[in-house]
Length: 213
Image (cartoon, rainbow, N blue to C red):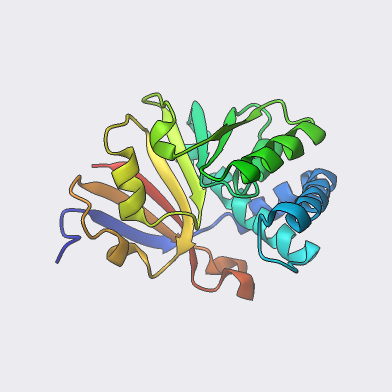
């Protein structure tokens, strides 16, 4: 089996109440972000066409689950790879003003929109960079986060020659083993099921923490 070299641990995400509290604490800011995202989406196509404000706020809540990863809490540099319209980076930047967050995407018009959104919202801790994640300079304390933008094996290939502390991904619960095909460096992978939210939005979704073994 191709993933024998990797250690995969599965458990449940236990911080759904904490996420709900964060969502409530920054309610006005998150609504402002949703409005900004929807305004730009009509022009740049950041998320699906016709997406509702309620759905955007579901994606904000989903993004906030990363707040409760120990990898995130201990990270000195946070890079949102394949950020698109700023998910998960903008919600994390709102809820954690003490953290420096870089939004990165290869599509320049998306990063242009993200830059404007961060500026309008006064998020001084959020910066942007256009281009491949391969071109982003990282420290040994860097944490890469991403929401459904990469398969694990693709992202590991992009990060192969870089120093990084960890990777936290939001993705499907049943995609993990298949996406490890071709990954030679042994990894430790914690897969936290998000179905504890008891909301159909989270069916099949997981928070995936990756470190080097």
